[in-house]
Amino acid sequence: MSHPIVRALAGSVTGRRPGVGTAPVRLALALLVCLSLGALSPAPAAAATLVQLRAQLETIRKDASPAGDAFEKATTELEDTQYRIKLTDARIKAQTKKLSTAETRLGDRADAMYRQGGEDSMVSFVLGSTTWDDFVTRLDYVTLIASSDAALVDEVKTTRAGLQKDRVRFVADAKVQAKQVAVLKTRKDVLEARLASKRAEYDRVLGQIAAQMATENPGQGSYPPGPNGMVFPVRGVHFYSNTWGAPRSGGRHHMGTDLMSPKGTPVVAVSSGSANPHFNGLGGKSITLKGDNGWTYYYAHLNGYAIKGGHVKAGQLIGYVGNTGNAAGGANHLHFQMGPGGRWVNPYSYLRSME
Image: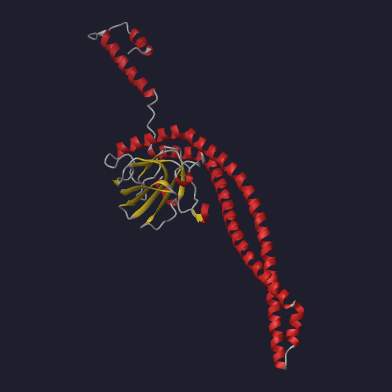
């Protein structure tokens, strides 16, 4: 009742009605004013809904999209060049071997012709026939040898020309590759800086979503499965695009989706099932999860494990984003594959549904 309006109204009461004290009048007036002020005062802001919170997450993710798109473009360009170099190198090796064989045969043929007297010897051989049929046979034989020699010479010329062309292409692509490596590093640094700058904001909103979900669905946990029954594998700010089938080192093609995220970002089980942590040269620290739903999930390039193996629940922490394996020195990310019975399918649309 310390509001100035309340005090003013209470103080203005100077007369008394029969049988009514001043204090009760002042109290009634004060209560009336308090109720009026309460009606006029703005109501406390309502907590953001899950839809609004998810929209905030999407806005934060989109903020990293330009840097992510530039990184993916640089990655694809470099992989394309490296694949061309691999093919060119293989052709150079094959052509070098072919040229060596052809040149040896051509040298042997030239030596034989020299020892036998060259063209004069061939003429004598043809004219030495005793019958018409013998003459035709000997002429056909000489013609065949001449054609074979001509083809051998053409083979050597063609192989030499192709080899020279591939060597020029190899040098040119190597120069392009060097520039693309520098560009990719710059793009990687920009993307990682952008993701890092949004990490705290993203985690704050993610925490609000977790708290609200835990309140609304106490029996399901903080992160219940999404519309397709699976939980998004990365619990933090991230960027990814549809790179299924894109060229990769060694002539491979990408069989999953790379989720770019800061090092140490939590990685969770997409589905309940049996998890098996393991290590391999390509994927580094990896986890294969055989879901109770019959699907298999593969996580690669982890920085570390949060489990030793065994049965896990959907949404349970199992590891952390890193860049181990053949991703060493590159951008931190989770390489993610999935498919029914181990038959890999493009994860992109599934990941979009999980979010």
